[in-house]
Image (tube, rainbow, N blue to C red):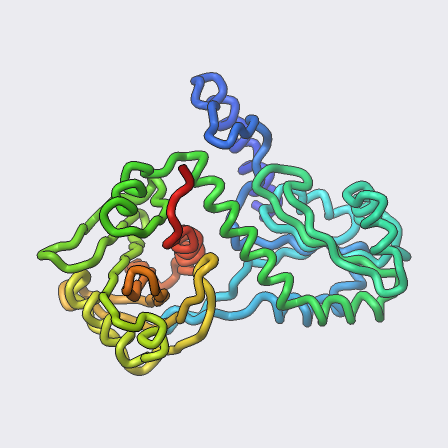
Length: 357
């Protein structure tokens, strides 16, 4: 069965599911979203739609750049699964969660006509200038869908536009992926009682979806909490430690690594590998963070996996937090990126701000 045929079947099933929700009375959604058609497939799927198939050699280098490779211990994965469509095949891209639409206005045809309909007068005028431009599209055809449209009046300008914006497009798509994952979890329900308890007892906030459960809570008095989801198994673990100068500790990588090792030993009975540790400065939601990635091996199970760990300073509370994401799957053939994307979307809700009354 062709990929677009499978997607079309998936869309039909999604529609049927929405009809059943409405019929059962379960359609009362937290965000007052109406039961409209939802994009199907994975948040890692990206449809690239071209106004002409002859644009593909021009677009491929930029798409290659935005579709970077991530390593999960010994397994490399592309960030996105990319499918290409041009001309009349454009109709098969309509139900993807992520769209990248690349238009040379001189091509004419179905993709150009679609782009004109998607753009308001101001954006259309801007993208028709000599150098062209880029616009974001929220739910252009279906809910939970995101698109980026690039257009220019000549191919040289279009190539420059793609080369200049490739990293930005990657960041935009992933930011929207995380927001849509959180949006979907909010529709399905959050464990709000847990969120309230964490603030009253520990002065931090995090949105835990109903799909996850509290697995460990300060075992033997250890300052840490673990939330897990099965099928495949993935876990988010939070640890905190008192610090006289949290900002200074956030710069002490040896102390942070020791903290992560302690958490792994106390909560997971695991060891970290020294061979593949990598550090980078980043943000976790609105909070400055230091990210550590690497691999772990269980002392209880035959296996291990990758971990993504985020350290955040809490100057007011005199603490440093360690928020860790890991997944365990026995099969190397199963993709890991969708699991880490989901866990990171949840981790980004971590906050030290007081909740709104």
